Image (tube, rainbow, N blue to C red; front, side, top):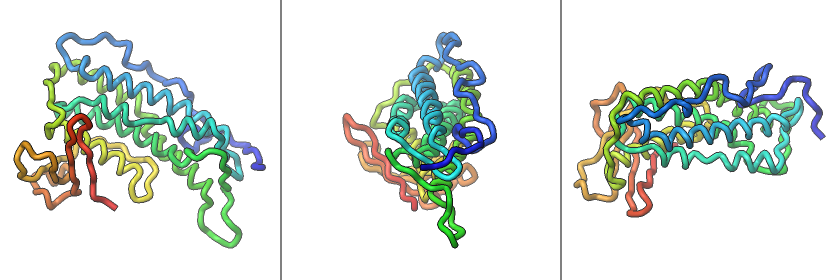
Length: 268
């Protein structure tokens, strides 16, 4: 059986003191909607983001109980809480056609949640014990220690989430109502491409959280006709905005009526 640690438990980060599961600043939901603004369009996103934030705090509290000095124990309730962290509801609530500054704020908030969610992903398997003590004669980290380090990758995102979400509400209040966007349009596809980019930067190539997107990357598309349901393109960093499709991270987007866009980013 793992021994108990004398250090305080960890909440979304290996630190000497655990942050409270209660947000330190008021959540923006209590603010009245500004009439004739985009706040109404983004209300489902704000609600979904707040709900996932609550779930993340609850999952972190359960994870903490299993972190010991010599091992990490994941029980069924902890694994179920981590498995229930669903970014999909947050992403699907983001409308297409956002102006660039509001999009930047929304994507930053989404990436806060993605970073925290994927930092907890190693804790999704139930009834397992992972040692934090490396095998004798090796300098490699033990799996349990890697899990604790992954958990710490969500620290920055957890600390900034409340302010980032409040920034979305404020910016939406000074933005006119959003136009209706056809789900088959590239405006909708670009939202899905950017969300997939954020997820992959937090879980791809061996990552486990830690990436917060604070700038909006540029997307360039192929020259296919507007009616095409299979498109290719590339994601460019801000500094490469004038480059062509071949200069960035390539992706394929396939639209299915009634389902939406499926995005495949060609990385790792």
